[in-house]
Length: 232
Image 1 (cartoon, helix red, strand yellow):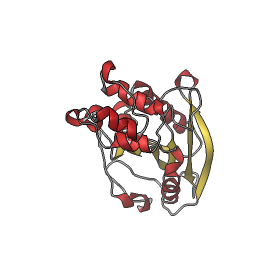
Image 2 (tube, rainbow, N blue to C red; image 1 turned 60 degrees about the horizontal axis):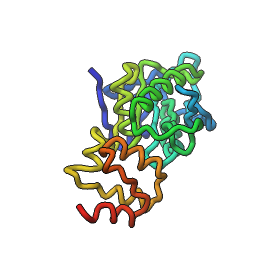
Image 3 (cartoon, rainbow, N blue to C red; image 1 turned 90 degrees about the vertical axis):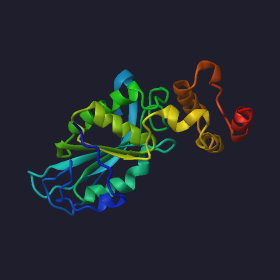
Image 4 (cartoon, rainbow, N blue to C red; image 1 turned 30 degrees about the vertical axis):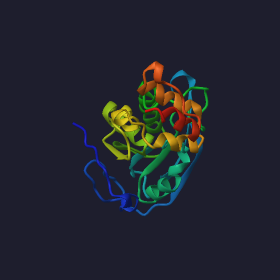
């Protein structure tokens, strides 16, 4: 049985020696946050995922720190969590954000997976990589966290990998079809996707998962979205 914990937005300011349902720490804060410069994590099929973060400067050789792994929101890079990672490191957590395959910071020419089998396998590979680093991670206290796309990735990471003890899920989805096409009514997000000029690759990936082939027209702009849905 896994514990899925949704914390208060002020969770980053929690003192480093405070215990939660699933996360503890073996050292006291505050700490100096040491930046982990932009790097790439190699996963399956030679895909490189962009990442960065912070770790706490230890006070003693025996210090260990819980790990929080953030996954990017839709349309935003891994660096969206950089400020939060710094605050967590100051509070005594190793905090890293990474960008799921197919988004702007990765390398390898792969498409967006919409938290499919590849994204889920990548999360396990990312965690394995991070636990091998010299950042004094307490492997018994690992959390995945995210907003939107990253929230669902975090939820699946906790479901798939027993090393993940906590999932912080903020505005995620359980069923993508219900989230974007509830009762056969397109959600407003489709108009926003067009307005924000979201890459066609994302729209194509989403549509391939929730529409039948004959309905998989890609809304490439707000106007196209309206034209595609006016008849409904």
